[in-house]
Length: 435
Image 1 (cartoon, rainbow, N blue to C red):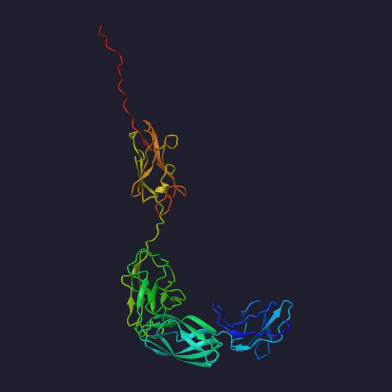
Image 2: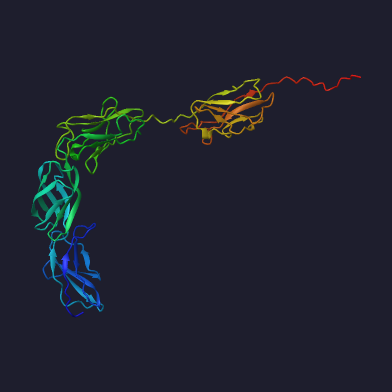
């Protein structure tokens, strides 16, 4: 490829996520049957290309690893299948790497305000412009203080929609950098508490809860402290907070309180936010006009049941005699039991040999309140026989509704004895003789 190819090279604003030290370029294709690809040459002085990049048969690329605030000069050559490059370079273009916006100060302004913002970052070229997403913000002037700082005069309309805005710096070559939610428009009213979690009056709240307070607008992180955003116990005393608490969300709207220890069981707590000159402030410095105290507060859950159930009584009682052979023995527990653990393997009637008596289908049955288990034998018991009620304990035994097992197996000491039925009267089967 000895002849000269004319290649028009231009900078373009690439879309997608690009990083500092990048430059995106594109060029017109060369029409040649022997074309194999292109090589991009670049450096920091006109016509002096100290670096190159083979991009293959593509007509655009992004150069990376460039030094910020450094002007690069770029040109392209085409090459053929034999590796021969065009005799001359394309037209040369020059520009800074893609601009990057790191911070916007101040990061918020009220409706109707006129502000001067400082935009800090890198690779801001002369003639750079600034844009805000949404409506209601007018850019009055942009001054390039240095390659890494712009001063921007803006006017926020009185009726500008509140909320976060993306801020974009664009160089004259149309390369740009955007800071998502880099600036927030606040109402010109004082901040207020919009909501709390747990909500006022909430009950059965876990003792591990981390209460939150959500504000009406973005708050100044420096004003969100353990002295201004608090959790009060039932006596009105502030609950101790863990290091770093309260924390403020990235959008500046929600403060989270992390107590230094679990809260108490069955206790009432209230979130409390201090207003006034020494209280919380929004990002523009406006204070909340008065203190906020949650009313009513929220109540934590009761302490979990860790007490093992016991057998309170049996019917028939231990030692009872003359018990009907049709009896359906019962076991009364100290607390409500888990029906799934009340089975013929855990609640039994033992005969005089210690063997379990067969039970009817559905036996034992647990009462609706979970306190009484009733055994229904599959057949009437034997006369003048001794039986014992047994309830199996331990991990495989009967458990209460909180999952606590009967500590040990319960067995009646002497058991009960069934009735001694009177003998049946003899039956006279002789027929009378009428002869």
